[in-house]
Length: 106
Image (cartoon, rainbow, N blue to C red; front, side, top):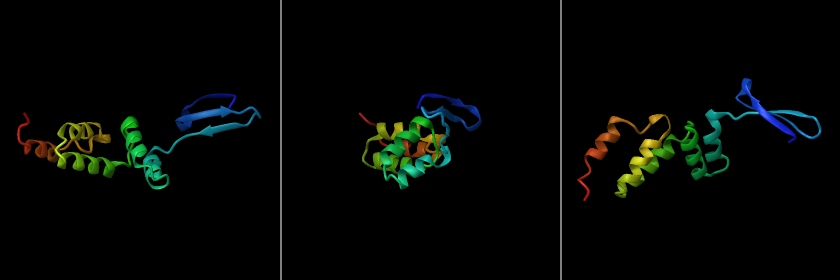
């Protein structure tokens, strides 16, 4: 690429390569996480991208990770997963009630 710049109409970038071709690139945020999960089969990358960019499509990954950590007694990490889950999917009354059932930790 010779030069790139933000391109507001598509919320992406526009670029000019060394041959003079103009390219417009944007990402479909609604489907990016599910594409990474299903096509690339990389669940960890999908999870991390969903956390960092607050993207939809990884709800089941967050729920499964939360449940696994909670059942193994790793309540601190489970709380972090609940707090970082996109769109607050684990910030529910049900999640609070789960934590309230945990016996006090020393």
